[in-house]
View 1 (tube, each protein chain N blue to C red):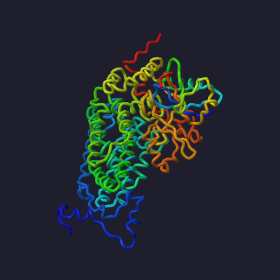
View 2: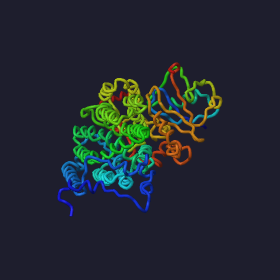
View 3: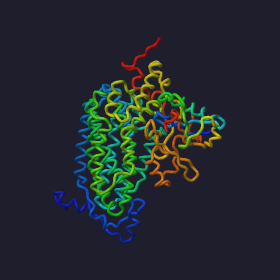
View 4: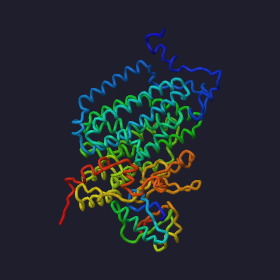
Length: 494
Length: 80
């Protein structure tokens, strides 16, 4: 019979492992699933993480969290509460709601792979709890947003998004399939638990959470805070795995960090960068996306690299330049092709642009003329005449990240073309090209939107592409959040 | 028709442009200007680069040896 105090027996259970007699250890934990470098169990015996929880404790804590989320939902999570939120914020919510829950569901698979193929019993146990965590991270946003579908069909994209061939969904799937579904246990721990969850999710849990508080979106604030408590626990699997890989194969550890920091950066620059610098109402903004990145991601990441004796990624200067440019490049592009997304972007007005100029003095001078032109087009058009202020050409996409070719600056786009085994590829940036060239067999078969169009698998006409491939119809495709009708936008018609 | 990736200086995104083999590159550059005009516009003399190499606007697409999915940059003359 187990002692009453779990601390008396927990380590006996969580560190339980055994020697195999009928099969080899390599067969039980093949490298293709467990990860590189393959090390014998004895090398993993000192693996540990600080939470050391039991199933009983886990269930009790999660039950309390669920009850707390439900209480907030009952109090302030109804349709009428959402109706009172600012339009820009609601559209940031649609962006997050679509990209979050089914990515979390894919993370269930990644964690379950670690729960089976992780090389230490404590790692496998922690990963099993993490898989359970990710189920609730799927269910909570699906539940909360479902209420809103009858009010606004764009919220239906909370569930629909990943099932479409929308260009953002293709990019998100390309990332999540590799990060969460296809990676082995080692790569998953370093990429997801360490880089993604320890580093970048602070943007959501600290940055966006504080903005939600300011805007008055108590439900979003509660949701991300509740999810954060899980992430804080299961992200702890990353560091001990990274420590072991650094010890045995430092160049590989450096490669995984470099690759996943870049890939994570591109995703968060769009999902969080849009929300912080464009969709949150100006009076509620506290810091810029760049400032949040500097405080909550970069500082910690560099400290961690130092702790493990690793180098900054080779593209660090490119990344720092991107802090001033990338999400601005993509937002202006997305705004001018807003019918291709499922949320309604906001046109930055004079006050917003002054704020952006103050926050981004190095780069905003290149972006302001773009917004001048777009604004002038609205001034010549009637409110609601969306396609008078919309791009018509087919845009182009990176063969690695699948995002639009919007890296670099307006003066110098960093896209480059590569011929590989008889096929032509284009990349938005040197890091994306570098990732492809390190593992071409992993990425070469994927078709971006342009390749699908050229192969006759998707329509070349933009409107047909939006309808047939991107899965949008008039009710759901993106429009200016205010129909181009802003108090500051004067239409001086003779 | 040859699809190429077009980048207009001052714009935020690469666009897919269809170029006719017999058209002058000045025409191809004008197509890119038209496709990007919501966001950017270049006035004055222009320069065109294919995969980073300068080409004459008076040459045809075929004469310039442009292949499918090459990168075309349209810039202000003297900008690079």
